[in-house]
Length: 156
Image 1: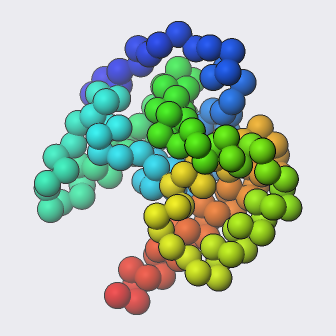
Image 2: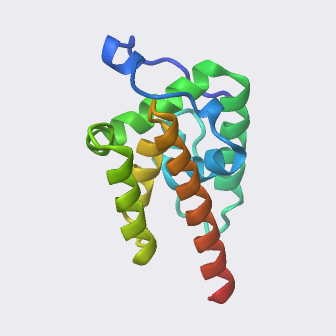
């Protein structure tokens, strides 16, 4: 497999915005790749998967391969980060204008009524933020969402 790394030249705005995927813990990286990266994104990165397949093995392998590639190659981590930044730009902009306390309040509301539709944008926005306290909140969200999904799967 070969991951496509060509992209537009970075602007000053894109250079200063997101921290690389390489800095995430393994649980957070897995959560980002599984929740935030779509099958269409994988195809755009040169890792096409059959979205109609009943078997998730192909998608899991592509995400595992991408995760390893992000860890080993900064240019691939930046490319994936660029894709996610484009998907979630409005949430990223909003989160970056908020205080850590305000973000903590939003996460507390989510914990009281966990819904999945906002998680990908919020997860990437927090995990890619320049502020260490915010990144820690993102890692906590990654762990909580993973645990919640695992529990719901077992209970189903």
